[in-house]
Length: 272
Image 1 (cartoon, rainbow, N blue to C red):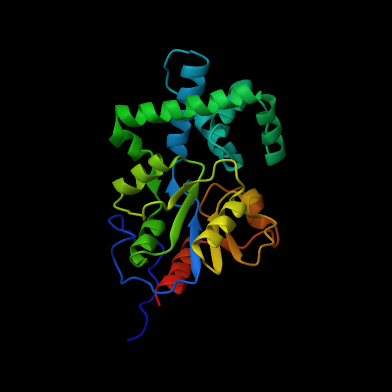
Image 2: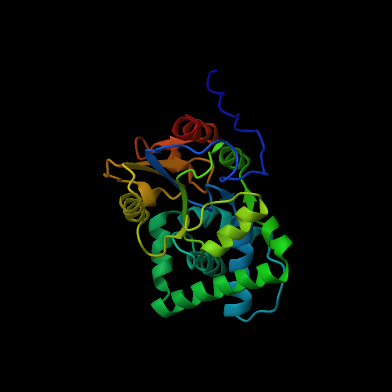
């Protein structure tokens, strides 16, 4: 009997599990490493709400007020430049100051304007706001974190025990909350915090530690994967994530991966 065709990218499968589904895949040759925000989950609204609360209410001590639509639009425009958790609060600072930032260089310069102590405070306040929102109304918080439909479908296609890791700047407990709410399970220890280590370095360390001859990294921040020279790691830029149009037009910068392409990749790697 021939191999089942790949699922179409629009098929929805929100009740799924990495540990359930197909039979275990034997002798997997490749570790699949996925970013979370912008690859698995569309979390831009949650990141906006948490960073708005952190900056305006906790940092600037302003009274609670509804964020204007223009601030949401500006946040979405700057979202592709995020590298670390505190950068979400940096975006709010840029918006409040009215700075004109249009590229990664300009964003990084604005981020460096804050002292190391201020950046640490931004990070602490961001996670404080996120934790408070989650504990106050878990369902509302989860509703701000939407799993991309094609990713839910892809997880449903994976065999039990698939060699899949999630590598994110988001703390593992928050990633686990979102996945569990969507019926997606990952093996214990397979949700990793990237912290300050470059992602390519973290993936290579994982590959060596787990004994895989190769690894695949799917990311939506081009600087995290651009210039990869490690022949053991294949990298892809998720076109559905928080990417700038110019990243998609830059010739040969990084291989691009569309939703249907990711489903085909999962089929090729695991459905053997």
